[in-house]
Image (tube, rainbow, N blue to C red; front, side):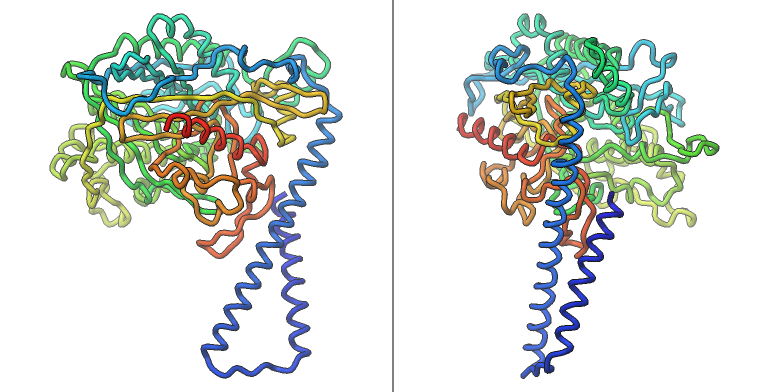
Amino acid sequence: MKKTIKVIISLVLCCCIIFPTAAFAAEVEEEYKSVEEYVASTQEETDSSLKTKIMLSKVLNRLSNAVINGVIGAALNFIIPDSAAVDDFEEFDIDKYDNFYAGMDEFIDEPQGDKVWSLGYGKASVLPADFGEKKYAKGAYLPYVFGNEMYADEEDGEKEDLMARAIVMDDGSGRGKVVFISLDAMGLANADVRKVREALKDVAEENNIVSINVSCTHIHTGIDSQGVWTDPIGRILNNIFSSEVKYGVERSFIESVVNGSKKAVEDALADMTTGKLYYSKYNAEEYVWDRTAPIALDTYLYKLEFMPTDETKTPTIISTFGCHPESASFDWASADPDKAVSFDKKFSADFIWYTEKLMNAAGYNFIFIQGIVSTQTSSRHYSGDGIDNTAHLSAVRYGYELGYILLGLSMDEAERIALNEATGDKLGIAKYSGKDEYPDYTIWYENLETVEAAEVKPVLNIKLKQFTVRIENNIIVLLGKTSVADNYVLADDLGRYYTVSEVGYLEIGDSMKVYMSPGETFGELLIGGSGAEGFEYAPIREYTDEDVIVMDLMNDAAGYVANPANYVLAGLQYNENSGEFDSDTWCLISYGQHAATKFIGTFYEIFDSVK
């Protein structure tokens, strides 16, 4: 598809170049009074040519959307019937849809008296009990890739695991506790999030928990949590001809996710202790980049550090950072070379496992919550250090380097050197630094800015809103209506399809203000720029007049969330940085063109209601 689009646009652009040139040759040559006038004229011609190219790309994108979504997608959905799991939209009452936690009715600005923070941490494996015997689909880029083996750390042979990590937070105000669960998975549909909440219903009531939030680290090397990589064709055929619905996501994996999440939360509640919370952030612009225009990144690595009053208790680091953990999924070298199509079948938690491993070595608990992930992915130049690695080992080094940065943010260089030695020199400074064969090696702590950590006052505010959103993308409609994906799907009498999603607003003291997004939010919707032009609402930071950050894939897996003016299923976007056009197919995975309007509009309703 991408090659076809590029051929078409090339032909169109060639015509644009040839015809004006021929017409110009027939005219009398124009005279210029000065060099400045000639330069200005040339610039006008260049600007005009660029505008023409951008206009043509937009026309092509709309044509592509019409063909893919309006013709092919619509035809498939007309032909293929709904599974028995699809419900009637007109009869649906969202107020009766169970397992939604709205958060707090009242927001506060200051701590309540002498109250302090309480926080607990827990984690549990979400690998199914039969993993190792039964093979599971890898949630990556190709369907029907099955395996039953986790990567092992080459240093000590310890096998990686897929985890549910949980924290429970309380500001002592009496308004309730808040739970955050982070799963090592690609994404989790809102319907499955509610299964986790259902399992925790009694626990929540007994412990005054007013908000339970489930996010995913968004690893591309875990077990398929969205159904599309397991057996999509087989599931569709079954659900066409049988009233017994077979879901795309293995029920044994959903069961392990629910059980692991419940155990992690129960352990976190048992671990709760008082203490102080500290906030810092670091501009990690050298460790992340944006793959597709329009370019708009939040490059900061955000850190919350909880230090218990009881020094015998383990401190916890909470970090959020917008970056796809996907590099390990590109490792083809370790696959069977004799097969026509090779693909690495081992599962991995990508860099997150190794960031946590370093944290544990330094005496900390760790939880990673995905940030504004968009099309941002890891830049591994500094962590790679010119060492010849497989993609997986590159992810290992990246995880360790991010871990060292997080741990050493508020330290001086002497303290960082001591930290490096105490944790086993995971990046091999002693082995690689200063050696002629590794001229690109960089030492992680050299020139690292020292950032003072600020104490966070014990104020915790959270509010969420649930709603129905129309699924306009017929590809996602097809996956939902046939129960390949786990989305709860509703259909109206006009043949339109909907699902239920959530957004939220979170405040942690004055330090961290968060838009809790159900999808993968494009950066321009947060920070603005040319990519925000034509959007119905102002960018988040402009609208709120706050340094809001985004936590993506929170309580749903809604796919990419783009400005409707730039929405394309398969086409081109102009890259101002390079002056080139980037191919763009991200919105093939999205609820539809107007999802951003629904999500961010609802977020602004929440924000306005508490301000």
